[in-house]
Image (tube, rainbow over all chains, first blue to last red; front, side, top):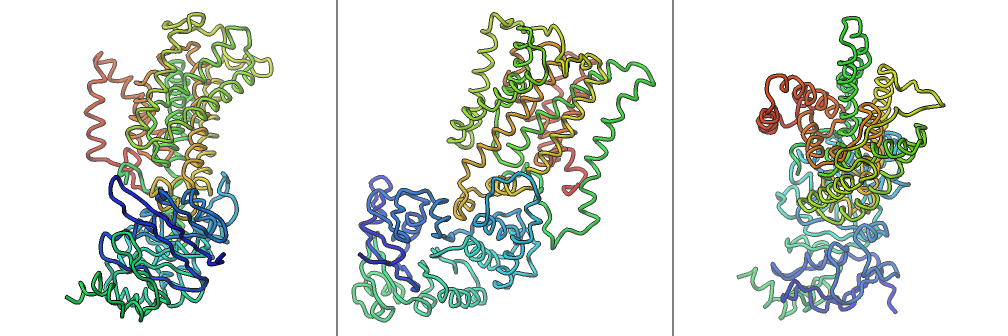
Length: 250
Length: 329
């Protein structure tokens, strides 16, 4: 029995007649950054939805931290430390950047069935949130409504929110999507830091980023994992080149 | 998402400049000061009419304010909120008809019945979203309306007249209209302060977060259902208290209190006054009632004028009347 923190065992998801993920089995080991790549429509985001609990799997098992979480809703998995980000930025637009992070801190510290006392003035929540914002270079923007931040700032903020929820494992769905060159460089630096702290599953289209960051890479094509291994072995894999990398080169 | 909702997120410490923070109390303070002083109008005569009208405004405001917790802060558009007003009112009338006139017992029953109805219907309604939620809350409200009309022993369609107002500590002081007025005032003020605290609390912040983006909230570990259901029960119980007051003020209850038109009025009041500010519900209730009263002097079809006013508010004053004073006020 493996003791990898996250184990996917033969998970499948169908949307109607369309099989989106097909018998995916994968172990995410402690301390690794595991990138999942694949062409558009390969089922990468669906896979993240299944792991996070945003979508329930039709079959197969998901083991996290030694527990079968296959049937648990997303909120419960998040409280266990299985935390995700979204491909399409997902923030609380009219909350300030600080409150976006503070409410995630709140999720993991004490009960939220507390009806008195001003939550936005709780020093313990705000201090932790501020520390996280500083880490992402957003301290000066703490009071800005998140909806008014730039795209790159929102992508940083989203990772700060995820970290505030005390993850034991992070699922990042295309954190670099739509960012400028400078912004994505900044995010890559952030991820370089994060990978030292906790295992990460990263979906990303930016191949430079993937090969710079990943310990292992899995390639998803038509919902199936066709190859899994070190970045170098993936680069050299003929099937992968044909299915995916070749397309990009062409 | 919901553009009707005011900017109500409390300013973060980094943003909260003292003048702005204190300005936020100005409008509610003015509103409650006016209510506190209304009984002085006796000095100019015609007291009983004004007292009755403003008491009813405060009772309407109480029900609308509780609905604001759902619509303004929780994005739960309930179209059956008048049901709780009816439950509270019938609790008084039915108990009184059996000789139980103790206000504390009546109030406890009103709260208990509202809690049970909210818990039961909320648990079902909150499994749906959007227009289905609106329809299912409407259906539950109508269920109660028809239950009321079928209660032959308690007046059925015609309703039921109260033999007397509630008694507290064996005293009938509520018979006095000024006492009735200040009880309603005290309850409204208490509910306002309570709801103010709730929306700023940890619980309220989660509720507002769910309004903003429920999927985001789930992803950080909050299951929206529990928080929404709790808010639904709190709002139902407060509306039940407004029904308790309404029965006492009018000394009469009827199934009409729970009709869907009354639920619609509550939403109208909120949109008119401004969603998601709490005191917007109070200002909306005042403008709604005064407008209805004034217009009804000129035409029977005063409702015909209300429609266009609502359309103008929605088109040109999204934040309602409170919005005109600036969203931070």
